[in-house]
Length: 568
Ligand SMILES: Cc1cc2nc3c(=O)[nH]c(=O)nc-3n(C[C@H](O)[C@H](O)[C@H](O)COP(=O)(O)OP(=O)(O)OC[C@H]3O[C@@H](n4cnc5c(N)ncnc54)[C@H](O)[C@@H]3O)c2cc1C
Image (cartoon, rainbow, N blue to C red; front, side, top):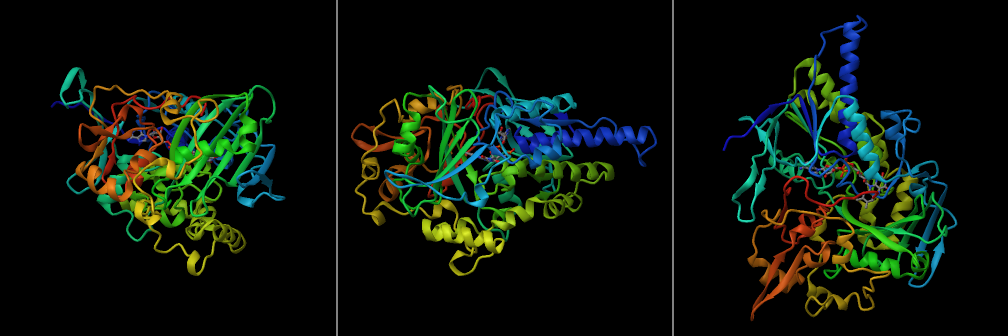
């Protein structure tokens, strides 16, 4: 097959805050350098025109971006100091912080907000909108942005140096044959490729495995955030109020918590995070969120309102111990792909932006030196160590480990972490952290009979007013995939599904997926078989993370397919 090959200087894979910040900063560094050399203020040679490309699998920049989000403006203020005057789409400054402990019936407000959750002076944002705006800033600076271009494969030379990325083919039918509109993917060759695919990037995962970039690091651990936007009938919840909750509906062995943010125009933004290191095999993070809304405090807030948007996405909460090596020959990792999210604060936008900027500075030096080897690019990792990212993550490095011992010890540990600057001893030490999917227990350990959901969620009904089933929710994520293409969820051994997995775990994919992609269906009198409704997929990556046998491989579908997270 003939493939087009395009020569770029730098290719950023993924148009998230990390990569867009990196591309913008790099374009400006190059322009400043060229101007400086031209007017004699800077030594050296001009770099000439440097081709910078950002590719994005979504139909537009921001389409696949889902976050909370309360943004610590530190990163954006370094990238664009006058971001407010330049019209960055900020919903509202945070004016009030509430922290609630939820029992089954009551909401108890803590007299003080835990320090990591103090957000006064920060901004509530729709990260979808903010990202789209960053994309515009990039284009104005001369960066080429290609939406609908998924990075499908890394390109390596014979020495295993990364030399670019191959984008996905278009127009392949469900059987793998080319259709009339077939277009082969393009080889984008680059001196440096930056992976900013967000959490559990499909290329990042393979690159880390291939080059052993996680050697000596702890395994990454994840949570899943499930979210809805509601239109309220009145001003009962002010814009700028941020509420975080602990307690109901999580059991004490499951890491979890809720958020409720007041946006403009009576839009309420609420969601629930469930740790993907849960043990009970019947846990369903979407159901946990639906139960959260049935709490009297939350249900009252939502009464008379209307759900308008839905989405879900994984969060990398492993922290500093799980950050892999950030560079190799011709490649860098930024943002959530590098694991820079601060789990205690549930914040990763500011570190994503900063990491993109640091990557840009390292790439700029490499361009000047004409050296794109790991030896040169390692200055990026050094920059990260010397920046504010590392002390921030170090301070909370053992935060998540405490929750392995239940909610109360987790909270004690979180307090100690804060006082001691992140130190931990004994059971709170983060060493030997198990990857999330290793924590889930078999049905028999919990005494469950089969996989009947009602054994855990007895009282949960989907009434279509306050609580919604997955299919209804997915409709509100505006997901679209061309159905005549190969499924992008590769189950490497389907025999396990109907036999071992059904028996041992009751096919947990049906529950951990928040978009009803996986369904065990009856096939005559024979055993049930796995049906993959891939067109529902919201690209949250949970299946790739959580499958107990690690046999689900998420790869990019045809470009443009996926959710449309407008306003999320
Ligand atoms: C539920 C939830 C709540 C959160 N709340 C907050 C909060 O309140 N405050 C905060 O600061 N942070 C929050 N975060 C974290 C924050 O959203 C992330 O840290 C941040 O978005 C990371 O930016 P990124 O650029 O690394 O990745 P992302 O924002 O994930 O962007 C990655 C982009 O790359 C694209 N992509 C992925 N793979 C490919 C590929 N192979 N080819 C082409 N394109 C690709 C994706 O479609 C996406 O557009 C939250 C996250 C979640 C999920």
